[in-house]
Structures are given as structure tokens and as C-alpha cells.
Length: 263
Image (cartoon, rainbow, N blue to C red; front, side, top):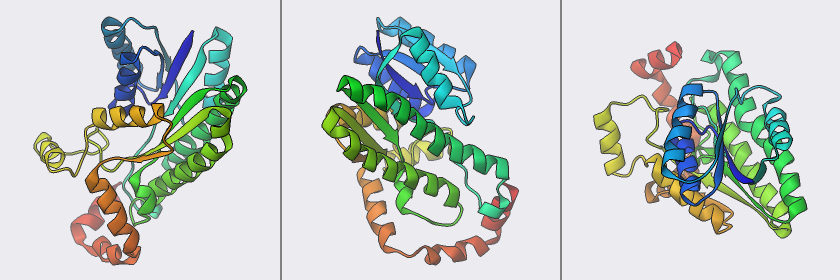
């Protein structure tokens, strides 16, 4: 039986990816560290679609997470035809005010686990001569500005890694698609419902289901990259032309400084 494996599948864009793939008839392997949310996802999808859903509750920031996932799939005969590396962690703070353990978590989650999942499952896809990989990067990869130094750096790694992996695998029948969204209406952003609705309405944020739908569409077409939304593309162009130092004075504003120091 063939599967689409999705990391960070219990909420946000990951849950939308699972629902989108299920609607296309793919069996699902949903992975996150939220057991109750995973069970809710399994029940919801199995009731709506005639597919199989397996869940794996695991901390993807553990060093051996990728190997554990791969070994479990091999042992149970779950062939992964689609790998969606979506799990992520957003943290606004200056580097020296960030707990070192959180830095280790975000680096392992974004970089180590994603790289190794692609290594293990990519080898099998290449051997079969078919497969699809989708990697969630971010528009912040072009925005190396204060307060997101660790986040944007890991997302830049994912972008460069995914672009290079496409060249390595596409002639073998394996596509690698990099999705680069801007702000997304997820729990990452602690905003009031009113602000969220406003930002979505004016295009400052995008709904997770929109990102997932466009991401899956791009992946199935074999596209190498997708930057979602006109506003996101505009911001990327503008910010790529502006030096990061022009944002430094913002850190001296008292409310912003106090907020960052509490992180």
C-alpha cells in the first residue's frame, strides 16, 4: 500500500496537506508530537475519504526521529510515494535572548530531520524511478533581519537544500518542490480573531488551506518552487533590495525591546 507521509500534520498547513492528499485518494502517514490532534485528524479523514490513515506521535526535533520514522515504515511495508516535510517552529526573538535548547530544537527540526527524511525516502524513490518530495521553506529566507535570525537561516538552508536536491533527483523521476509562503493564518501568530480576518482579507496573510492546495498542485505538476501570494512575492522583491540595517532602529523602541526580552 502506497502513502503520502506528512510531518507536522496535526494542525495548520500540515493538517491541510493531509486533507488535500486524502481528497486525491492517497493513504496518509501523519506525524507530529500532538497525540490528541493526530487522532482527531485520523477520525476526520477516515470518515470523509475511503483511505487508510496511520499516525505516528513523535518529537521530530529528536536526533534519531528521521531514522525511527523510516524504520517503522519499512517494517510495516508502508511505501512512501509522497514525502511532505512541513513540520516547523516559528520563534521571534534576538539570538542572545533565546534559550539555547530552543535553538537546538529549531535547527534539528528544520534542518536535520528534513535532510535525513529526504535521504532515506529519496533513495527508495530514486530506486523505484518515481516519487514526489515537498519541502516547506519560507519567504523569510530572503529576509535576514533581526528577531528571526535563527528561523530565516534554517529556512534558507531548506531552500538551498531543496533546490540542489531537485537537480540531483529530477532526472530519476523524483520531483522536489520548494514552497515559500509568507505569513500564514496559523497558531504561530498570536493575534486576535479580528486581526487575523483583516490580514487575510487584505492579503497580508494567507489561509493554510490555500497554501496546501497550491503546494500540492505545484508538487503534482513537478514544479521546482512556489512562492505563494502576490503580496508575498512583492515583499520578497522589496526586502531583497533593502539592507537589513534599516530595521535595526526598530529594536530600540521600548515596547519592541521589552517584548523581545521576555521571549
